[in-house]
Length: 145
Image (cartoon, rainbow, N blue to C red; front, side):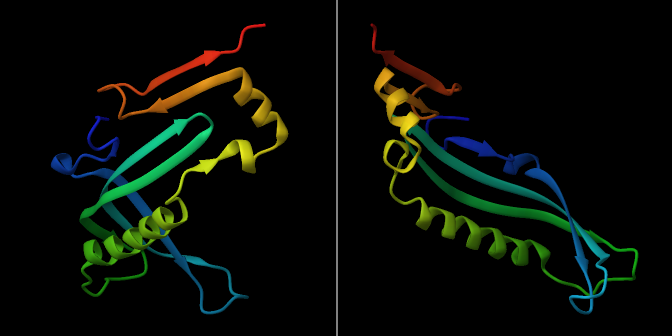
């Protein structure tokens, strides 16, 4: 985690976050699914997020997929550029998430009434990796009775 990239998921230099993705398939909806292939890959992603006065914001970026290999009990797989295939799947998910979360979401307006009550007690609540290097900074001021 750092103040420039936010939360770094998977280190590109060491092959990314190791992920094993098992794919199951069937010939139709009524047939039981069976294991077809397992993809072994390394994934990298940056997540910038903040929680500020009960509003949250998330931006995902810098997607990378590397060193993907396959194993299958069924038989030998035809060659695919699995890094490229998985990259575009994950990139599409990231882009959709970024569009959906483009504006901060105010929990005081969208959440239950108790959120507004708690937000009134804990003013100026903040949690963000961009505030302090190597830490998720968390702070608030409290309404005293």
